[in-house]
Amino acid sequence: MVWEFFYGGYSDSTLDNLIFTFFIFTFAANLGSFLNVLVYRIPLGKSVVFGSSCCPRCKQIIRFHDNVPILGWFFLQGRCRDCFVPIPIRYPGVEGFTAIVLGSVATCELLSGGANFPLGNNIATHFLWRGTDGLMLQPNVRLFLLCGLHVWCLAILITWALIEWDRKQVPICWWAVPLLGLLCLIGCFPWLQPLELGPNLKKMIFAEGISWNYWKTSGLVSLCGLVVGWCVGLTLKSLGKTGTYGPQGLALVGTLCGWSAVGSVSCLWVIIASMRHALARFLSIGEIRIRNGALPFLLLIDLVIATAIFIVCWQWIDRYFESMTRFLLR
Image (tube, rainbow, N blue to C red):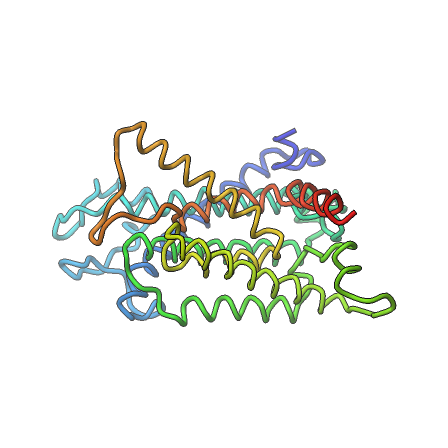
């Protein structure tokens, strides 16, 4: 069952699916390498487009063959080729983490034909789009764009999470522009929001006979998600459970996946953070501290994992949420 879900049970070319999966994870690792650049340059106000990557000590430009994600660190034995200064293991760690998170989400969505999306959209019903053969023989533009949007938003969350870990500031333009840009994008292209309001909520909000266009519904879902996510994040921040960018993180999740996702992702966030703290105590690591004291209980890196899990299991979580809504509104 698991193999059929990820690799398309209707495709006979398992080797093609494995090659496609390898390509996706390789691309995600390269994206993780770029995120390392963003995390270093954004707090310093440097350009993230111009200027080659270089050693922060000797200022020598990193050679192309040394800049291979993950493997480059091992080839150099963890040291700069020119000045032999140790390269923190964090760099290949970020590349590996990004490859796993983004690669898993992209592979799940593309090779399953969007089977993880909520019911009611026109993606999950087309089973011929499953597997690499389906993607090649009948390309689904909407599926590719939705997957790209989810990967982009997760990459933004990872960037914020790493900057939070370093106790540095994210410039307002680097969190306000993605939030407002995502909201406007979904408002202009409503098919980027696969979640609907649901029949029960439509009856509560709109009077009978009122026509409500699909683009307005999608925009309302994302707008409500942004507001609900921001309010929940502010509440957690006021309680001292999350850091500075908790509201922005949950607002991004709500805008991307709808207001109903905020509650589910928040629960997953707490569970993952609790597991991380329990594992730290079990391994006798103790409280994680950096320059300015202890980190908050809920880290954005935990939110990244929670959001990725939610996207992969979106259909089943949404089904449960819809059943609970029907029960409460009876």
